[in-house]
Structure formats: C-alpha cells, structure tokens
Image 1 (tube, one colour):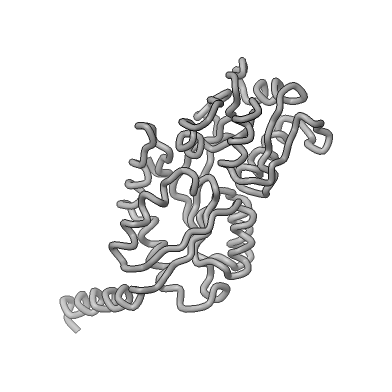
Image 2: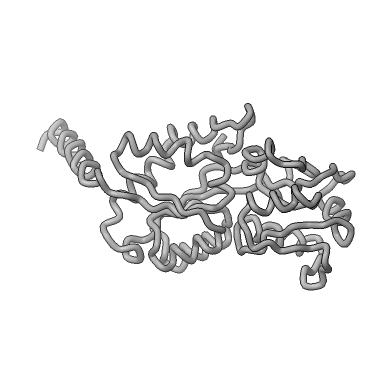
Amino acid sequence: MTKSLLGLTAVLSLFLALAGCRGERVTIVTTTSLDNSGLLEEILPHFEAEHGIRTRIVAVGTGAAIQMGRLGETDILLVHDPALEQEFMDEGFGALRQTIVYNDFLIVGPDALPAKTLADALGLIHGNLTFYSRGDDSGTHARELYLWETFGYDIDGFGGWYKETGQGMGSTMNMASTTAGYTLTDRGTYLAMRANLHIGVAYENPEDEGLHNLYSIIKVSSEIRGGDGEAARVFFDWFTSAATVNMIGEYRVDGERLFIPLEE
C-alpha cells in the first residue's frame, strides 16, 4: 500500500470516528471551583460546535466527583486533588489522566493578615478569627486539611471559630463574606466572584508550591462507564490539545488570568 493511500486511510478512519460521535453527549463531572470560575461556560461551546458532541456538566467536590467516576456515572473528571486522582488511576478506574493547568490557593477575609509566611497566617487565624472550611472532601478541603496538619494543628481540637459548611467554594465564600470570616479558596473562583463579595485577599504567596492548585482531566475507563468511550476520548484529546490549553490560559476575568498552563 502506498504512503499516500495509507495517509488517506488514516484520515478517513479519523473522519468516520468523529462522525460516529456526532449527536452523542459527554458527561463531565467537575469541581465547584472550576465551575464557579466560568471557564467551562466560556470554552465548551467551541468543543460542541467543532465536534457536534453535547456536553453535560455536573459540579461537585473532588471527593464526590471521584466517587461518581468509580460508579461509572461520568465520562470525564475535571478535578484538583493529585493524591486522590493517582489512587483512582492505580485502582483501574481511569483510562487517561493529564494535569494541564494550575492556579494557587489563597486566604480571603475582611482584612489583610499581617503575615509574612503561611505559617504566620494560619497562626493568626487559629483560635482568633472565624474560619470557614468547606468540609466537603473537595480538593480545596483536602488542601486546607493538609496545610493545618503540615504546620502542626489538629482540627479535631478546634473550637467554635472553625466552621464546616459542607458546601461548594462559592457558597462557602459567600458565608465568609456575609459574616466577616476567612476561608481558603482557589484564585480562579475568587476572581470570578469578587465583585459580589465583601472580602478580599488576606494572604497570598503564588511562589509557595504548597499553595499551588493543579487541575487534571481524567477519562473514566470504558469498562467502568460502559460504551465505547469514543466521544469521551475525543473530548479528552480536545481538552488537552495545545489550542485548548492556550485558550484556558488566555481566559480572564476583569483582565486577570485565572489559570496558567503547566508547561508555560
């Protein structure tokens, strides 16, 4: 078979695969922080127009998202808890995984904290200021617990100043905003919501890797989800493509970038 014929066969195979996906729907379970940022609302119409595949978004905490993946209730996961993601992959529930962008976590509240380090900031909050924890097994909640533990705190001994909301990032920030409390949030959600909040950045350090917030995409195994998984694979390839990652990196709210491509 000639090279030209081989090339034509490959193109035809790809065309038929994409054509077979048209009219299908990809279910995407994502974090409330990513959903609140407005990013998916901005970019998914480009995917649907290009491939003719509809998308359905479900926004929950990362822990709940991973569990939905284990139960085969979604095609795609967009999550931000690397340890939990790796466990999911090691257990055979995920077919493909790629970390693509990041932003950072910061503490927001009614007043700036006079702290030079994260340890100082947590020390000022501990026992003195109202702090809202998401308490929902989300990626943000997992990072918050990790930070308290890293600096020697045991949340089991925390008093009434520490309040678990059991809610998503948007709701938790609103609670902090209406009661002059503090909370840990990702920068993207804060920037997307800050116009309607009465709190600001209380502590930040984008250079602190402990505050880096990595977002990954996972394609759930077809054996778990059922079906041939072709539409999900098309979405995975589109989402991880250089063009889409660049589009995510260019997404801004009030002129500020919400996400930074990992390879930048």
